[in-house]
Length: 616
Image 1 (cartoon, rainbow, N blue to C red):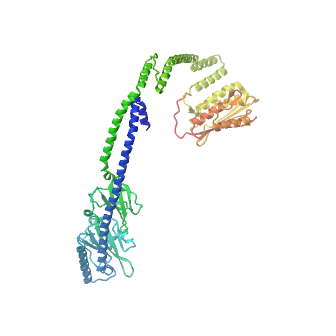
Image 2: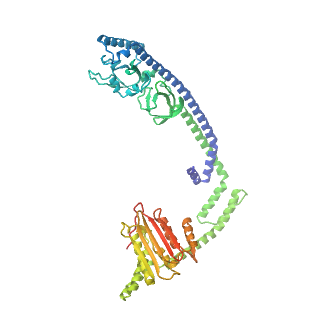
Image 3: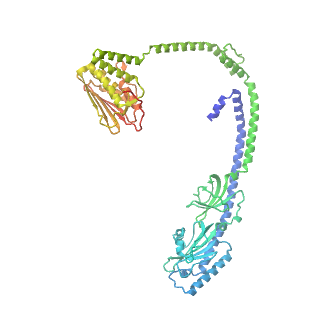
């Protein structure tokens, strides 16, 4: 939205009015088109729902009919044969009994084939009795329980508590391995739904055999009896636990379905191969499968595409006609504004001798009067600004001329030091050398963070100068634990020691009788650096100490000492907070007439930081 507003603001006033008027007048037409299109789409969704519900009912009827045939065939076969006796390994069968069983079984299966022609993919009889030899033909396989136990689907058969149960959809086995001929099983690509019936020992109730009848999916729900070509409707069986989707429509394409099957039966939306679709589903209690009828949304709304095209064309033509009419109307209404725009362009070229006609009392006339007043004052304003700019440049030039080159001062100190050494004023020469190093270190500010060794060296230069001034009155205890690894390279803020030690002389020893003691301790801890500066000065009053700590806590400006604020310790603390790793702190503790202690903890950086090369 902001993008269009920006584009609109960059247009001319005429175009802005034309666009706004055209959009406002087109809104009702667009609203009507959107409402009509939405209503039409809702009607198509309703029609799709009733159509899918009817298709699902037909699919359910066909599937129930096939399931009834499979259950009836398996029940008939069970009651026609004496399976509990012949399949029991404890039964002692004669040759005549084994031949009788095989003949009767073949006769019974033939009768079932004649009753349900081409309905089933095959029959399987698994027996615990090895006295009856294995046999196979195109339609029936008689084999032993060991073959079933070695299969991938043995668990779903033997673990079921029901006598008759449906298994999961799988690929059919054309035959089983014959123990004598060692013929391997050949898997084909026919998907079947198996129905099992267990045979029990009459005494022990142990499973001694299993009857299996397989129904191909093409026979379970006959494709030729489904409206597969009507509106591109697709029929599926879905196994929710394994998330397997089986097509009934005869298509060889792979399908992936994403939908919510939490209700018992419902019309809902889902994603079929990453495309939105409508589906009607119903669980099958006997098989545990979900019957699903699906139609893609693009097929449902295909009839509405032409209508939407006509609507868009109508809105476009209306927008063009309204824009043309609005353009001519705006040109007539804004004629005086265009004249004002012409005058403004003259001002841009430097011509301030302009005057607009102030006819009428409307808003444009008031703008014209204000415009004339602006033009008369514009030249005076420009002259004033030019004068101020000239004065500002002259002031900056004088300030640049008044600046002192700090390198000139350093070179002067170096010349003085060399002359003192020539004249054998070694004490003064050493002081000048220390002062020069201090000055050079201070002005060469290439980085906010420096190695601890450089800062410690700078502190020693400063204390050597102060030692020259105070002599034996000043006693410094310097504890620098350089036995710890990498302590010299530990990064600290530049000029962290001098302002704090300088406070000892300016504040701590100001009204104190010598001797003056300063203890400075630096120690490398596990993951941080400890810096402690302590003196035996006059200390800080409780009230002022509370003010200092309060400024630390609230980030307030430093409290004033006399006529000027005390900024040394606050400057150091601010640089520690903003440049050192998180967790670095500065703490102040003081007792009146005993002294002040400043403790600093600087955390070790977690990542290696770059330090500019500073001359030692």
